[in-house]
Image 1 (cartoon, rainbow, N blue to C red):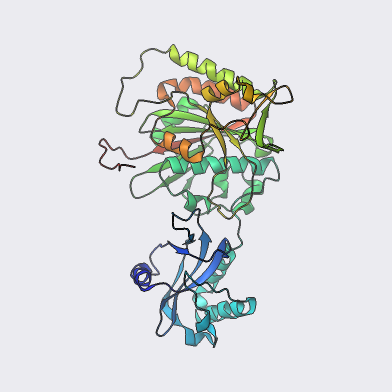
Image 2 (image 1 turned 180 degrees about the vertical axis):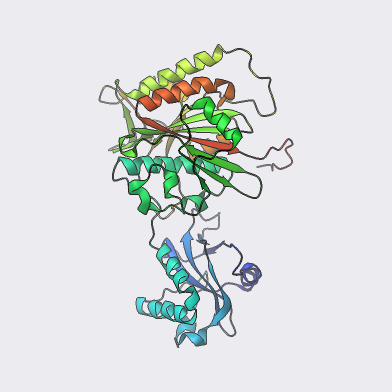
Length: 431
């Protein structure tokens, strides 16, 4: 594949073996598969191959109407470009693609091409095989049992935390190794090449953890970038995931000094669409009552901290429920689980409405009867900006809630979000 002169020059300037690089482009070809393997040509006369990569479909078109594709990390950049004449394929020049005209090589031609590449660059042969394997590798678990369901909920919680922290969700979630799922105690066991820390926490994090949990951490992972942003994810419970009934994600934002507790619920596919039935005996109703008791106890608290730049909330309700669609495989391995997210206040009010009633004598939440809810992007933005959640003064009350949830068969995961502090609006732009 080659590109227009401007893009080609830009790639030549940035594409070097020692540089960790990725890029994206638009194409008019809507017959592309979700993942494609490409050899990148940056010199036309004579034709030379500079790099080898897997590219994958991106979400949306950016308003261009074109399909967007991304070259995934890691790219293999050859120390010395490979000349077409050395590949012993006489018709190869006629098969060079552009973003406007993509040509797929037939199976035999492609196999001969990759075999010659490996013969010409034996030191890179294993990396070429690794990139070829990326095209069919899977990073999302089919929900065949309790373990996979719980791991997918934890995976979604990890993705939400990374988004709230302003980090690269795609890079982390695509590092998942699902072959480890059978023995995984948590989603952290599925991550490759990440700074996983056994029983080692920052002193600051240990203090936060002790406010809301009795147990000591089993495993933690630290994610960050060059801007100073950091997300730390902590798992404390060693309960076998086969026996866990649900996942709780507790989010603490260091800048805004607030907690959010997100509980995962699994919807069912019914004739009217995805829906979560709530019979009179549902544990969700008891969880809503616990949320009411919590908020009443918070209202009685005294000696609250003085207000600050970061303390104001649109809602001090820390309890949110995410009603998730069941797993549907797709090419976007970094995607979050789609679903309906509601605060406990909103959910409690909704369940009193006639629209919530179902034909079985209970209530239900679904797309067919609940037009107002938070999608993933809306929830992330509210949490990221500190507009929702309860202050750390309520941590001891949350500790009781989490302990009760654990007794009820739920497992918790703590995400500590540590964004940089900006005391002016200079970094914000008018939308």
